[in-house]
Picture 1 (cartoon, rainbow, N blue to C red):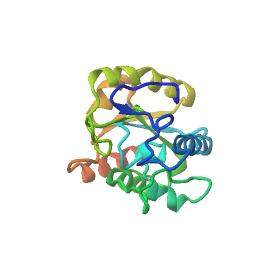
Picture 2: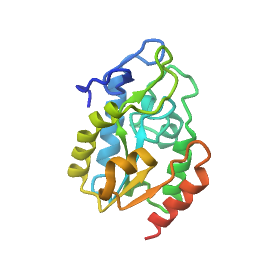
Picture 3: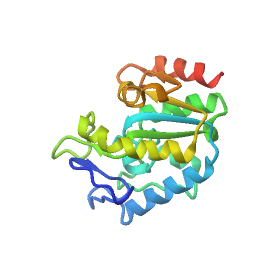
Picture 4: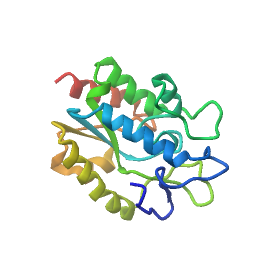
Amino acid sequence: MAALRWPACANPYADEDPALDLPGGAQIRCANLRHYLDERAGARLLLVGEAIGYRGGRFSGMAFTSERLLGSWGPPYAPSSTHAPGWAEPSSTIIHGALADHEAERDAVLWNVVPAHPYRPGTPLSNRAPTVGEVAQGAPVLDAVIALLQPRTVVAVGRIAERLLGERAHAAVRHPAQGGATACREGLARVLDR
């Protein structure tokens, strides 16, 4: 992951901005991701979102996961931003809340079609939809993740993931952003109750 280059995106596993990242921030995020995946070895679910957001994976290293959530998980997880209280992300709260409600937190891996943070030019603390090219660049990474994890159930979270995954998705749920929180929770409840 650290070797990938994403024009107009921040690679959380390689890129650091001294104004935004603690020293060694990329290494912190790599360590967070490694520990996260180790804890979830053999997970039966893979939830695939769109792209990393600045309040989530840009500083935590994991999809749909904020620094504030990492704080509740405790060590060895660590924040990597200079934002003192740590970033909070509404989508993180919704997705992890649904997983916790169904006691499935350790039985699911969260990933993104684009495992980088697309932002508006000159505004690193912004989010934008990934381009067609960025989605195409993320596709082989997602393929490798699916091959490595071999989940029993792949869930597309949002339309970009649904389009890319096609028939490989066993289910699709609404993305929690922009008014989709309730529909996302309900969709995840149907998947998790199976």
